[in-house]
Amino acid sequence: MGRKPVLAVILIISQNLAMFSQQWADAVKRYEYYISSEKYDSALYFAEESAAIARGTDGEKNLQYCRLLRNLATANYFLGRYNKAKYFILNEAATRESLRKTSDPDYIDCLEAAALICRKAGNYEEALA
Image 1: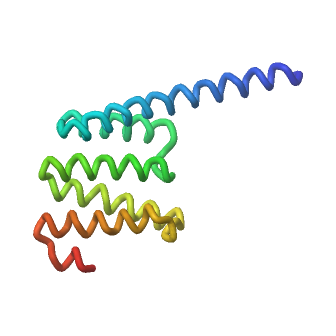
Image 2 (image 1 turned 45 degrees about the vertical axis):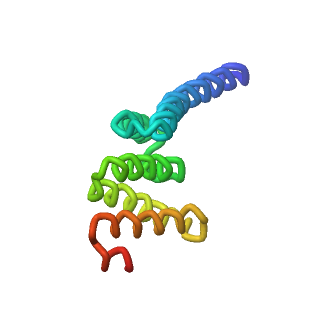
């Protein structure tokens, strides 16, 4: 196989990866629009869609997916679904810990969000932990 066919294959693969990333990025943009418009049901739909696309293309063990977990937690929080919000925010924290990103400011924000969600759910002792 010559050099040109290899470059062509690499180009095709990178275009396909960009297309899949673009698909979940579009869903994130819609999530951001609906969350800022206080249309939380629609925001949750697009948060779920972007997470599903990213899970299928990029997997769950990366910082981009952590951000999508935060979107799921946020939408559920605003809908009053505190247990679901807690589930997603704790998954984000665990993923950041497994990636050894505990000195990242987003990890600290994640822990603060988890405490807020626990407090709002009435789990005061868990919020302090």
